[in-house]
Image 1 (spheres, rainbow, N blue to C red):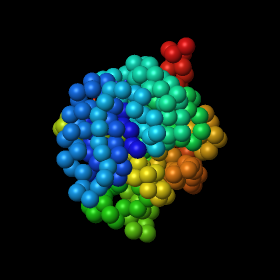
Image 2 (image 1 turned 30 degrees about the horizontal axis):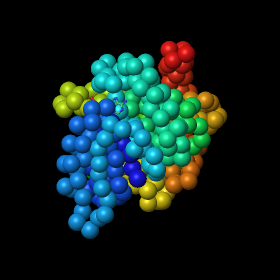
Image 3 (image 1 turned 90 degrees about the horizontal axis):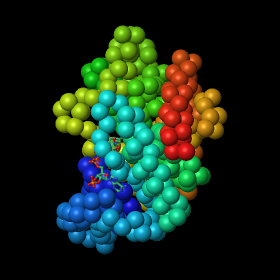
Amino acid sequence: MITILGAGKVGSAIAFLCGSSGLDDVTLVNRNEKRAIGEALDITNSIPKNSTISVTGTSDYSQIKNSDVIVITASVKAHTASRSDIMLEQSVMIRDIARKISELAPNSKVLVVTNPVDVMTYLMQTCNPGSNVIGIASSLDSARFRYLLAKELRVDQSQIIDAMVMGEHDDSMVPIFSRAKLGNVSVNDILNEKQKSQITLDVRNYWKLLRDYKGSSVFGIAKNTFDVIESIIQNQQLDICASVLLHGQYGVNDVCIGVPVTITKSQVLINEVSISNYEKEQLRKSAGIVKSNISQVSEFLK
Ligand SMILES: NC(=O)c1ccc[n+]([C@@H]2O[C@H](COP(=O)([O-])OP(=O)(O)OC[C@H]3O[C@@H](n4cnc5c(N)ncnc54)[C@H](OP(=O)(O)O)[C@@H]3O)[C@@H](O)[C@H]2O)c1
């Protein structure tokens, strides 16, 4: 069973992908129950004819028992200037949800989408230790990086290989130019420093572009989250960038940031790939920013 906490724009889009593909039973849990029921009734009509799954909506957290995967998209409100500006309010809600999960569904895999995602993932894993908590955002940032590289190089996105973004899902995220390739050629050999700086800025500010045109990411994050849910439910290995707790990898300890991982039904393996010294330094700076946000949240929740 797939449980999605928060039946807002992102939660219902993820539920739609799960329901319309007949992946597994879906339970949508929302603060305002009517919304969860309404989204479930709508998504129910997209279930394939030969599928036996169901999609239901509720505000009752006891329904999360027996979940294989719990996806957290609940959010107190939208952020404005930066993803961290509602961090303290979100942390109270996430701690409350974390306690419910550890009581009712301690063996579920937990995917955190709620922003600021790295801090919320850390908070969630302190209540649910082990490798069950994964923050989803860096795969979305990586997709944005791939798109921006393709646009700059005037090629199709499919020609860009190994575009990955690591670090915080916010202003300090680190696009890894040293690994990205156009075919067999490193993009470092094609792009000049000015182009790289502009792409770095554009990938960090992509959410602001969306904000100006439509509000916030819905389909991009929904599909990136769905891919992880699908890999867990169908027990298929998935290699992506995601926010996980680091224990010294990349010289970073006791913080959740986006790094390349391999996800299987039973575990999440951190892949320590080679990146340039400059990128390592940027990654450590990024981890430092998340760490200081975690300290603020810990102090606030005392
Ligand atoms: N990781 C990423 O890359 C990424 C990308 C896009 C968005 N996000 C984040 O995803 C989150 C959701 O975005 P959205 O656009 O879907 O927001 P949204 O449309 O405002 O939806 C949030 C939903 O959460 C519900 N909610 C609030 N507290 C709850 C609780 N304790 N339990 C259950 N439900 C609760 C709200 O209920 P009501 O109906 O009662 O208001 C609302 O339906 C945000 O934090 C956003 O920043 C992350």
